[in-house]
Amino acid sequence: MPSGIFHERYESDERIFQTWFVRIWLFVLLIVCAGFPVFASKYMISIMTEVGIAVIACHGLNLLTGFTGQISLGHAAFMGVGAYTCSILITKSGVPFIVALPAAGVVTALVGMIFGIPSLRLRGLYLAMATIAAQFIIEFTIRRWGKLTGGVEGMYVDPGTVGHFHFDNHIHLYYLTFIIAVVITLMTKNIVRARSGRAFVAIRDRYLAAEVIGVNLFKYRLMSFAISSSFAGIAGALLSQYLQVITHESFSIHQSIDYLAMCIIGGLGHILGAIYGVAFWFILERILEYVTTSLNSAFPAHLTWFVSIREIVFGVVIIWFLIFEPDGLAARWRTIRAYWKLWPFSY
Image 1 (spheres, rainbow, N blue to C red):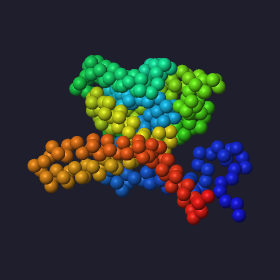
Image 2 (cartoon, helix red, strand yellow):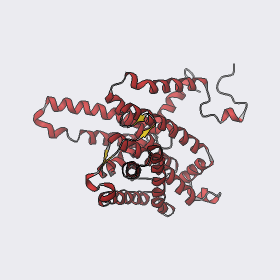
Image 3 (cartoon, one colour):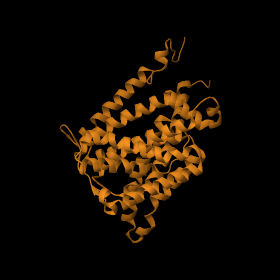
Image 4 (tube, rainbow, N blue to C red):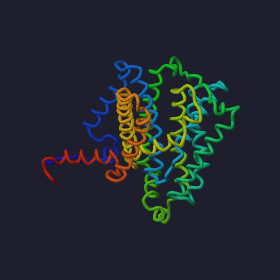
């Protein structure tokens, strides 16, 4: 008896969701996410909004670092560009949110392209240093351009509105973030499957061979920077609506390292890696919050002992994944799924 997935047309082979089983589970997941605010507390809705914003940002970073092989340690700074662009347009210029949000993505893409220009000559650690420079340059600009950004004091963000939706309402912001996260995920999947995505992977794996067969390295590296920065800008704009007050400290290099760590844990070069990494990160963070609070209550005389638990644990987790699971959770899930497909046979 034949078993497996067989395609008789190219259209069926090119589908993103190739089986009814996957489509049904995806539909169930979307229904659960759509109905989540009905039974969840305000705190949980806020956490899920943060998760959605982080997923959008990590898709951009994964596209740049995971698929194109361009290391970036300045991703949070590009989120800051998007956040301040959106906030300035809404608060100081009176631009509608529906215009300010995509404008934040466009402006951040342009800034990303400017800092992506050195990518033609720089690779590896040298490119990482260039992106760190971008991080500090953008932070410095935000701090010093006080008339526009509010400087070190930051700026209050007017809540965006689209029709009857007001995004100072945590439920409305959750749905907006959820919709954009789904759209960005599908966009990332289609980019990777398209000609540009194949060029990104070729540059990552063998950039000299890619250049020999006609791939324009500068064009596609710059394109990768632009798309990645655009996603970061949109995530930053949503984050500004979530925080309602933004400062340069909201987009520091620590956040950039956190986003890179999420991609590493989830799996660089995997679409689902961004989602798995963000989910793992936020779950572990909530567990550590509970453990730290419990330890502080149990040992009030030794509060200083538990201050750095988060950094220590996350540092150990990142090192563990780099050594023992370099392909991340996405690759591990693929292995588990393949095992159950073959079980009880070994072939």
